[in-house]
Length: 331
Image (cartoon, rainbow, N blue to C red):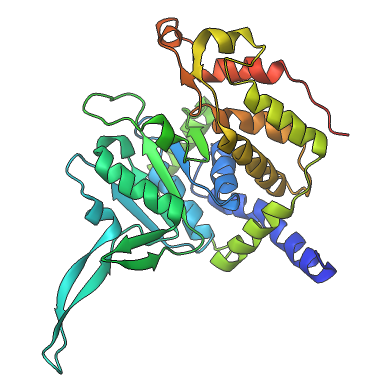
């Protein structure tokens, strides 16, 4: 990077603490979750957000979009939702001057910078596939015409971990398309008290815009330029390969994992580690970045054997064993 570019990027990175401060005017706590959503955006991917109802998932995503001046749309997924309800449809229009009729593509709610796909597992596979195709290609093809999606573009799909009856769980191949699988936990006692106080009185947090869409795109470009040591690259490669039961030395993987993570997981971990470095105000990846992000990167990419469910063994417990078995130090 040239000096002028470096100075510009440093100025943008310096805005991230202000970004988080503005979000905190509305969202209490959940700092790790907020970091992971911002990381997903900077890495240019999409994320799956799991949490019980009532934890302000919609408000959180909407607030993030506001402080970045990004267009926000929310789609409530239901069993009768059709692909056209998401992507858009053609409608018959008439030219008032000539009287000629023609078809006009009416864009659906997916044409936004930040889209909340609420309860994605409540809609059938056909509609899920339409969303996931748009996520991957970042465009919509309708009637032979290509319609590019806005840039930056981020899908945050939510799942309710409690009610699974009448749902359509995402297959492993589709889950793999999500960069991170983020788990939203209950707030601490102090945080919950603060939420109760703020939301039942006259307080109305008004976050200010900190970044523009063009600045987010610049940060995405910077993310790929962040330095990562060759030893850390080797470590990530070993970590991903250690999730595969046929070649791993980790007994817990051999016992409970049917299929390990693919190469895309390694790519995701590298990009997210670089993005976390930016969020933390650094221009180089550290071992801590990798350890922290190994969990949201891998938890949805491990296909667990039925024995894991029977013995109540979670993916995070297996990932902990894998990470602990591979200590690392950058040179």
